[in-house]
Length: 160
Image 1 (spheres, rainbow, N blue to C red):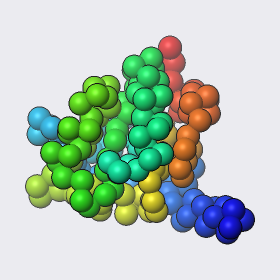
Image 2: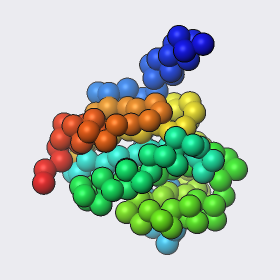
Image 3: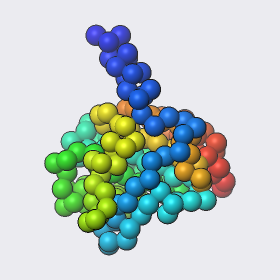
Image 4: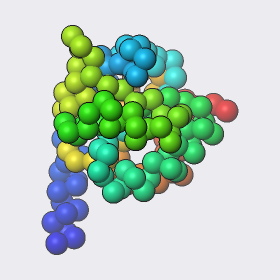
């Protein structure tokens, strides 16, 4: 069973937007209505995590990711790829993570699910580390180790 699961995860990672590729563009908004695109983060590293409110791995790793967001002060964008996660559910969930930037559907723009599909994510969570030009530095399917994420942010151009 573990071998089958490992093969499935490896297959999924090879389908997703890969390191070295430009991340797909998107048009989503924050809770105040401000519109964000990939270009909104130009010139700085950014972490984008696709998640779901019911995801046990997401629940377990969000506190550590939030602590890193506080420490590093780079954008940590969170996009729920779960169609049943309404804006209200997302914003309520994110109240305890004020350093995260939850992005929501933009009327006339994208839906979070469409953006997740463009990144070719399967399952939850998926974390992408991008450099200041929007190029993918690394991708994590499932749990991400904080030390690895710190290394990726350094590769993405993060400077203290």
